[in-house]
Image (cartoon, rainbow, N blue to C red; front, side, top):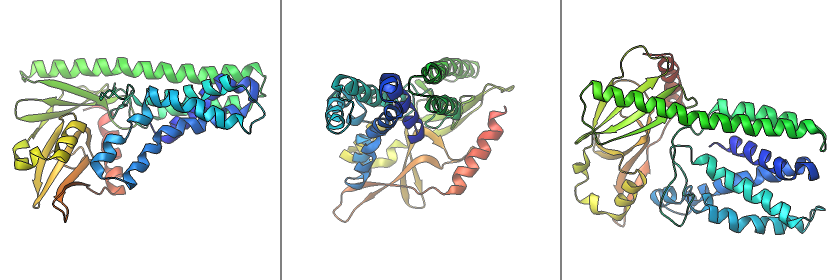
Length: 332
């Protein structure tokens, strides 16, 4: 999830653990701990694109990381804070660190929660930014913050924030299941033979859902809104995996294929070989659009090593996408 949401979650968890004893400091330290796992993004400054993608939401988003660094953070804090309960501080940091990847597991990218096992947990039921999850949570947190440390209302507001946000998160799983059944029925009605379906919510909402469907030689992309009145339609994108040629055996290409979980197409455009990760959709909902959110040019550097160069996106792309989404959310 986005940084603000993780800060709010960490602060609420900190308050739940030690708020009654140390007041707003519990929120402060919880918020700090809630941002620590995402420091793995700095890997992009020290390594190549593919390796940085592998590192993101890996070790720092695992139970092992939380278990190791919680007592370390607790030890550091008890060196200078007046409140010296090491066990209490350890619980605060562990839960604030652990709930971060737990929440991220509901997004499309997922988390390597059980590192060192090479498995990402991804429920794909919520977008990385969802106002319906974040805003109510933030309001309850602010209300709690304004109360005195020992006030009963403080705990009530904080608990309400945790309950409402968690309930919404559970609701997204139900909405995902409903959307999945709609896509499945549409495929059956249209007599489309397929291998697998991958569904996720569109940006910033859980009303409009998208699906990738794998067939023998192509991927089908479709959308479903809970306000739809017409049948679901699908648009086909050829896999074109054969365009990789000998590159298919390259280590970096194999890594990128593994990262995408096999949901990728290859496009030869303007003498550029583009690798498109289908899991995060397009920047446009126009028919035939090929500007995928995560798209990389495959190039060789001066040493002959294969590199993936992410294609630039402009603010206009984002505005166009949000405009298209708003229209599509209201139904087909």
